[in-house]
Each structure stands twice: as structure tokens, then as C-alpha cells.
Image (cartoon, rainbow, N blue to C red):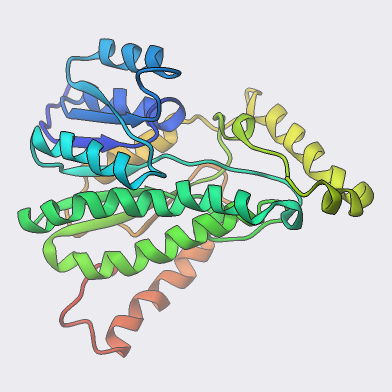
Length: 292
């Protein structure tokens, strides 16, 4: 077993990729902080289970949709020492007729998936810039590179995260900080179960039989993800581990994991064009972060 002695912060550690990643990094010898909401209440058992797994694991209370909660959580973590790696893993997903989701429901997803990641990044970047090193891994989705029916409000959050991460990668690269995106396809997780139906019932009803298609699709996804054919969630954790262990400045901007929906091809085509903008804007001498 390798021993790294890095400090890792992983948001959304109550289940899924987050909980598995907390254990995996602790197994490597890293100091791991997992964050979750309601750690002293609804998720108390999950907090206890993870902290019992390894003395290198501590669970911190954090609601990424709250400025105060994020500030308090990271203040406590940073008081224990500098953060080497932040993995923004917290996320929610609603699937249904896009028009039938209310603005408030769209905002709920954006607040967690996009603004929540920004809050966490802004909490760690000052200390990372001062140290001249660091890695932030943002968990996006293949739905952040392509848009598909019935995922409209969710796709919007991940497209936003992709755009923010791409720009930030260029800007913080001169400080020795890497920003990387992991783009999972469909995996067994609690995202489907935790989703909400559209709030605008009158709009949903106006779609007639078409309005029933998302539920049938979700049922099909759930069946596939519960079968032996489902991709192994460990693949996402392995992507986190690989990026963490890669040489600074050499980490790829995007890593697609699992079912790709052609996003690997999209990235291979667009990333060189994206990176060429630095030279065209005459910024290549002061910024970095282009893919090798």
C-alpha cells in the first residue's frame, strides 16, 4: 500500500462516488475530510461508519448550498492544515419534461451542482495559490458536454460547471494549480432515487402521452443500473485516484468514465480548438492549463 500523506477534501461524501472515494484515499494513506449535510442528524450513521473505517477520515458538516456552512466547514478543515486536493462530488439530478420544471427547481439543482462547487473552490483557492500547488477535481457528467431530452435542467448545471472550470483552469495554472473535470456516464447511484418530479403539473399534463416518456425512461435506466451490465462505480473513484497521482501540470482537462455517449469524441475534437484560443488571444505567455 502506498502512503501519500496528502490532505483531500471530498464533498457529497454521504454515499456513492463520494463515500467510496473517501475510503479509497484513506486506504492510500491520505488524510481525508468528507463533507455532508446533516452529519449530526439524518446522516449520523454514515458519518460514524466512515470515521470508523479509518483514523485518517474525518467527516465535516457542510451544506454546499449555504455560504455560511461552506465557510465554516472549510475554516475548520484549514485550521487542521493546508488542503492539497478538493473533489467537488456533491450533486443532484432531476429528470423529466424540461418545461415542466419550475424556475425554483432549476435553481435548486444549479445551487448544488454549480454554485455549490464555486463556493468550495473559492474557499480553497486562496491557500492553494499561496502554497503554489493544488488540485481541484470537479465531478461533471457526460450531460455536461451533450444535451439530451428530459435532462435539460440537469444538463444546464453541468454545462455551467464545465465552462467555469475550463476558464478557471487557465487562470490558476500559473499558480501551480490544476483544475480537472471527471465526466461519468450513467452509474449506479442515488441520483435517480433522489430526483424530484416536475412541479408544474399543468404543463406536464399538456404534453399528453409524451409526458409519460421520462418516467418510462427512468425505469429503464434503473433496471439497467441494477443489472450485471451496469458500469462499476469504482471506475469513477479510479479516475479520481489517477488524476490525484498524475504529474502536476500534465493532468488532462477532461476524463470521461463509463458509458460515453460519444463525449470522448467530442472532447478529442473540441479541446485542441478550445486551447488554441489562448494563443489567438495572445494569452499563452501569461496563462497555462492547455492539454498536452
